[in-house]
Every structure is written in C-alpha cells, then in structure tokens.
Amino acid sequence: MEKVLLVTPERCIGCGSCELACSFNKSGQFKPSISRVGVHRFEKGQNVPMMCFQCDEAPCAKACKPQALHKGTSGLVEFDKDKCIGCRMCVMACPFGNVSYDRYAKELVKCDQCGGDPQCVQFCPTKAIEYLPAESAVLNKKRRFAKRISDALEEVKD
Amino acid sequence: MKIWVDGRELDVERDVLLYDAMVSAGVEVPALCRHGGLPHEGTCRVCMVEVDIRGKRRLVASCMYPARDQGLKVYTSTRRVEVARRFVIGLLLRRNPASPAIRALADRWGAMDTSRLSPVEGKDLCIRCGRCVRACATFGARAISFANRGWDREVCTPLKEPTLICVGCLSCAEVCPTGHITYRESQGERQIWGRTFHLVRCSRCGDPFATREQLELVRDRGDVCPRCLREEEGLALRDG
Image (cartoon, rainbow over the protein chains, first blue to last red):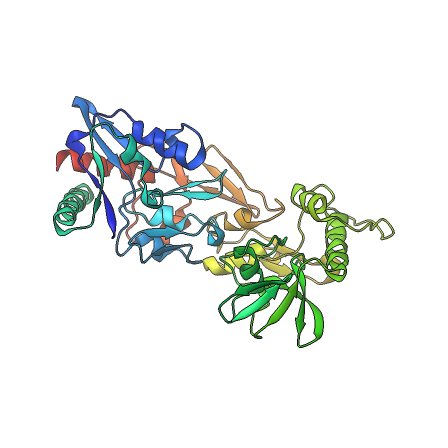
C-alpha cells in the first residue's frame, strides 16, 4: 500500500538525528547539507523537519525535459539518475525548495522515502516523522498541513 | 521476445535497445556518448557488439540498436568486437591522451597502439560525441552545435561568439564525458561559452544562486533561493 511521511512539528526537538541518518544512508557521510530531510530550527524551540512532499502535480517533474523526474505508480516522484542532464530546472521549479543538486555526486538531493524504509523515521526519537499508510485520516492531516503551507506562502507573496 | 547475449537467454521487450537490455541483465559494456536522458546518436562507437541475424554477422553500436528479431544473438567479446573496440579506444586515446575518462576506458578494455598515426595538433579533451549538443537541444536552448568538418569539427556557439540564447544552466558541462566543457563560478559570476552571467542574489539571504535566464524559465518564480524557500515554508508551518 502507498505510504506517506507525516510530519508533526510540535513533536520535533531539533536533535537532527533524521538529517544524520538520511545523509549517512544516502552517501555514507554524516553531512546535513546533503541530507534529504532538513530541520529548520527557529527561536523558542520551534523546529520543523521538511522533505519532498511527493506532489501530485509535481512542478519539478513538469520542468524536467529529459523526464528524469516523474510521478511514479508508487506515489513517489521518482528520480532516474541515468536520465538527468544536470540542468537544475527542478531546483528552480520546486516551490518549497525541497530539491537541490549535488554537483559533486552529479545527482539530485531529493527524498525517495529510502525505498520503503525511511531512515529518518527509524532514528526520530519523538515520532515527529512517521511513515504511515496513506489512509484518509492520515491524508487529511497531510492535506491540512499542505494547506497551511500554501496559505502562508500566499501571505508571504502578498 | 527472446534474445541471446553471449549464450545467455534474455527476455526483453521488442524495440528495447541492446545496450539497455545488456546493462540491465548485468552485462558490462563500455559507452561514452550514450546518455539515458538524451536521444542516441552512436557517435563514439565504444559500445560496439556483434549481432547475428539469421546467420549474418555484423558490428553494431549497441546503444542505438533495437531488438526486433526473435532469437537475435549478441556477442560482446568476440575477437572482432575486441579488435574494433581497442581500435576505437586507441583512436580516442590518441586524440585525448590526458583525459582521465579515456584512460580509464583504455585501462579496462585495452587500446590499440596508434603511434604510427600522425600526432593530433591542438589537443583538447573533446571527442566530438555531441552529448552537450543533444543536452542543450533537449533542454530547449540550442545554444551550441557542431561547426566545420573533419579535423576542424568542433562544438561551439554561433560564430564562436557569446550567445544570448544560452541560459547558463551548465547541462553541457554536466553531461560532457571527458571534462572538456568547463565553467567558472566565483563571486556571483558564472562564465561559460565566453559569456559572463551575473548571478541573481536571493532577495532574502543575499547569496547568488542562479542566472536571471534560468529563473525566467519558471513562471512566477521570485528571487528567493531554494534554501530560503524551505525556511519560509518552515516558518509558515510554525506560525500556521
């Protein structure tokens, strides 16, 4: 069944375990700068971990001319390294800044849910990131989450 | 449909390219000009294999040969293939003796001695594979192309002048298999193909992050860099 990563910012303590687990799993290095998940730490102990939303109408996939990025049947926006020409249009197109390009490894830094076993979830001590089946309750929560972002982004634009 | 690769039976879909079929089956075949995201042109000839179609044998570039004959036999290491491959790699090495990519090929697959040939003048790392030209066309800019013929053939911008249709996306440099295409980036400037791009600075953090032309390709794209976008999103969540 399709599963989603659900973030509950209220539970995040900003320890950064997810970032370390992610970068270590992907590149063998403890290097938050190339981690697919990023924790933003604000004053008053408010922390928000963020990663690719796997959008339905993914702007990154639309911008990708060689079709290295596409919305797969798994529900993920899948990346095919073999097809990537390194034009970085996905990086420009993502409205959330959730994609970046590693020019040394010549690949995209984007969450792929670790192929079904997300390491950020494994190592999160407070369940701020959960990996749950895409049921209606979870999806509703995720949608509310997404709406909050888009509403706030509109405010920022205005 | 079924094809045979070095005596091994493979079940492939019709029209799948031999190179792709072989690589996904774990057969090692070298390639230089092939790129998964670009149309294939078969210019480097490094990926040559021998095919047997109803008793007729010939050498083909596997990166652009579609499997269409039931029971097609493919050989990747016959003497004929090896001689052809070593010859091609020998010529490439003659042209770019310093290129790490070509050296690695020669070390792995062998290279024919080409010292009897006259030396190449004006050595550069370009092997004229055209990956950069195809990448630029796929991207949609078409800022570079081949010019001239024979020994003078080279990749350049129109009339070798800095061109306004280049957006400075760096795809050409990213896909170049030998490292011939280079760019420089420092202090908010990016230089490629003789043109200097002044990078747009993020309206939030002030870091230079992309060319104006790159940003214009995305509708309603502001001047906020991806890192700050993410942070704004985080702020929005916190306050939401």
